Image 1 (cartoon, helix red, strand yellow):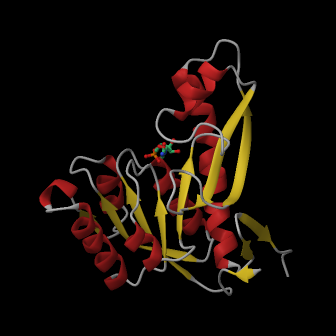
Image 2 (cartoon, rainbow, N blue to C red; image 1 turned 120 degrees about the vertical axis):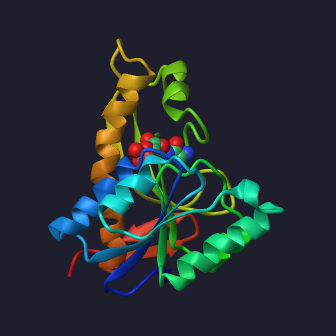
Length: 211
Ligand code: GAR
């Protein structure tokens, strides 16, 4: 079993494509003093992403890096890696980042790229997870914070939260119920990194008792 990290202040980078409510929940937790971390840089692949505006309002450095400006995916991702490295980012939190992450990126931050997904993985990987849950007729869904590996939404699971699916739910109402839980578990998963409580064995993440 491998310990992911020893306790200490965590420098976080955010990679996001859109609205940025998960970023805000993490930033709020830091401001409240619930986690000993600092957001060093926000990168978005979308020029008009709200997350960039929200970051600027909080005086956090933001950067837009658009894949279409690069010859290929590797060059694009190398730019992300370098930007995060020069900002002294130790952990990258994907917060509504709607792309797959490549090998070089994953190997540059081993066990230190995390993602939030709006379903109880391994169910409903990929896009439109809430719609997939409704179509499958499940009684419960939820969200998952996991480490990112080479697969799509397949990495070691850190935390999950469950919500009921109501008979009248549509995609939006279910997404909102799940989102409220996302905002509670993402920063808690990051806190486990800060506290040095995460161990990995294969796909399994073990969380040690708080000392
Ligand atoms: C969240 O629901 C997140 O779980 C989902 O996108 C939304 C982003 O919202 N992520 C994925 O579906 C990743 N495949 P936000 O921009 O307000 O944090």
